[in-house]
Amino acid sequence: MEPPSSPNVPVTTSDADLDTGEQQSLLSRSPTAEPPSASPHPGRKALKQGTHNTTFDMGLARGSLLIDLVNYTFMALVPTAWAFTICSLMGSFGAGFSPTAQSVALTMYMRKGGTESGKLFGALSVVQALW
Image 1 (cartoon, rainbow, N blue to C red):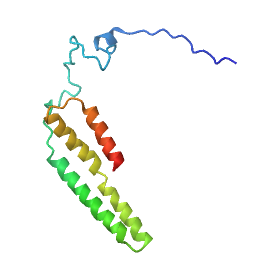
Image 2: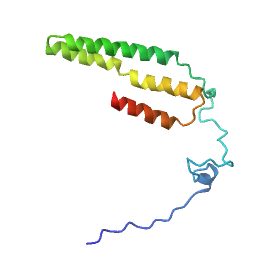
Image 3: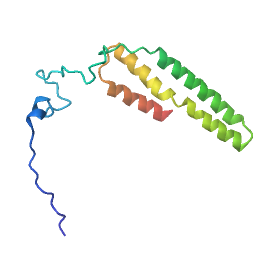
Image 4: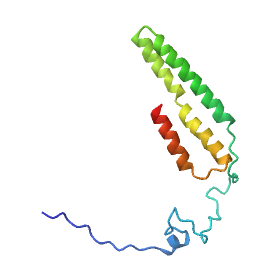
């Protein structure tokens, strides 16, 4: 028995799609491609690339790591199942370590001139999987 074939639907593009560059590949680096001039949020000021301050991220990463260390220590030492459950629930406050560590790593990578953040996140995921 032959599977049913899909109907042939003609693909049409509107002039608006062509004007906004919707037909251009996202990965192509065409010299004719111009960034859009209109801001999606006209009331907001445009941020310069690379101006991310890592002070908050570093503080959050340190706090999350401290919570994790204290939490895992208490989980090993508690005598009852109820206390272990409470410690496990408190461990959720340390869940911010991984995203903030990745944010700090990306900021440092970009400051050193790195352009391919995919390689950085690939390496970080390998390290995280080995952890």
